[in-house]
Amino acid sequence: MAEVDNVYMNSLPTKSTEKGMAEWQDRNINVSSGKQVTHSKHHGCLLPVPPKQHHVSLGIAVGCVILVCIVVAVFSMMTIQSHKSFIKHLTRIDENILNSKLKESTKITLFTRWGREDCPNTAELIYKGRTLGAPDGTNGSGSNYLCVTDKRQLNFTVPDHQIIRGSIFPTEYRYGQKITPLAKNHYHDVPCAVCQAARSVTLMMTAVTECPNGWTKEYDGYLMSGRDDLKRTEYICVDGDPSILPGTNLAAPLKDASTLFIVEAGCTSGGGVFCKPYENLELTCVVCTL
Image 1 (cartoon, rainbow, N blue to C red):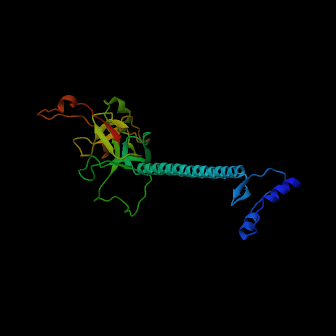
Image 2 (image 1 turned 180 degrees about the vertical axis):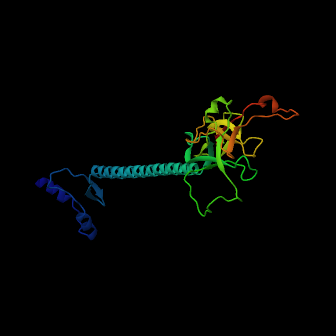
């Protein structure tokens, strides 16, 4: 150790200038540790060279940490953006479903199912009642049939019979005994039902029993009206499997009742296209919605 100290002391600068003293104070030479120290010349003096491996390792470690932080940050941003897109997608789906339901809810069409107190499976019942119309023995009052509910709600009324008035009476089936599928309902009162379908348009077609492509068939039956030599009425489509109002079977027709007869196709004296396929035939009908 003495020899090392002597060698080291001989390497000290001989001039004790301020510059030399500063350089001397900056040297970090661990002589007593016994480790080999590498020197370099600086202004004619030997200076220790610090090891570089530790600094390189530290720089790599810091770089790795920074890189990991960047990767984590990018991944987090991508995940958040993905979640936002997914939430927006779900919100858009919910809005579309809501808009679709709102549009569907605004599609409503009504039709009367004559001859039945219930609605088909394609529609919902609004109310049921009985068919009424103007009596056959008069020329006035209404010309259409009405489906009137039994749950009456009246306002001002006048007791006793009024001579000057409009009139309305129960409507009876008047098929005649020759119409075999419907003969059992002869002289019975006609029920009815007002139905609601989640569609926009109602169409009654005559002389057919099926609806056009894309339309929903509500029911089919027979075209009926008042008798052609009595009071004029409208044409209605009465269900092909009609029911009756209980307790209305009479041995004789009700006087001045409103009536329903099956419509038979006629032919003019001059002939025409309508005569060939339909003449003297009872007409069918179908009620469709879209």
